[in-house]
Length: 344
Ligand SMILES: [Zn+2]
Ligand SMILES: [Zn+2]
Image (cartoon, rainbow, N blue to C red; front, side, top):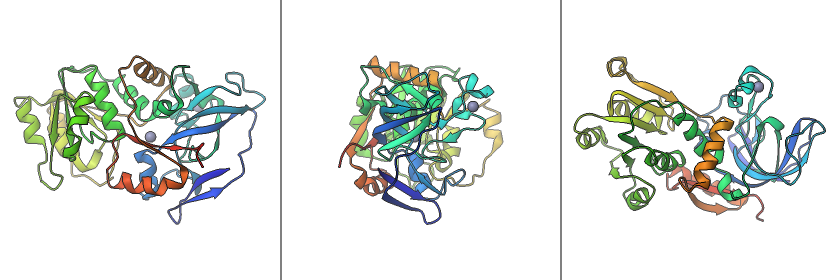
């Protein structure tokens, strides 16, 4: 089968021919139809994210497809089922798996990170990692169900704050654009932060009530504007898929008793943090990089109800995956680019 194989030591991503993986008793073989390219994949390829990465691994964790065959002990899905995979190959029997936290399984392996993922014609996942999708959901829309949309739902399931004003940084990215849609279903006002002036209209169409375009080279990029827009109160929720690059300024925008929802770290740079800034505003921080089954169900309902639209920037063949890397590096992608594994 055709697959994009990442070699950890050299950092190369090479389209290769591999054998279709073997199936053990509790595993499911999925014929991949779509796999969207996540910022996580880029971070691994750039060498920023190394922990737990397989030495020679097929990346891609945002995959949808059709079950091809199942192991002899699999009882919850059958060939022909339309599915997505959760983000972790999980055991199904540890305390976390039994409490719908299989994305943090005690012996779990990250799909498309530690073990092989979806930039391939076939992938083997554990039965416990399979999520059967609704008949009305297309495989194209489904590949973003778990990440980024389920990750956002998981974070929101822990949010206990006010619903007046939210800010979303990295607004055009996969987490950003879907974070705006989620926030707009709950908050009176949603401010989108971006460096891309041309995205203004699109962000508004997706639910942003205000779009703030800032200059990335400025020392203070957006804090003064956010404080002016909120009459110096700050915002109830700051949805932050950007992380360290904007962290201190993001914290500064949050109101007393407000919340920072940390969903990613693009640059991974060490920070000089002033804890007093967080302590005296009773800041809550919600970190989320995974999605449990309940959050995936919520994400599916949001899409089926029309409250969330998966934003597909482009659909390309696997042969174009290096071009996708470049576009992601340039931050010129709004939403996600999908790799169509049935092409070519
Ligand atoms: Zn992802
Ligand atoms: Zn487990």
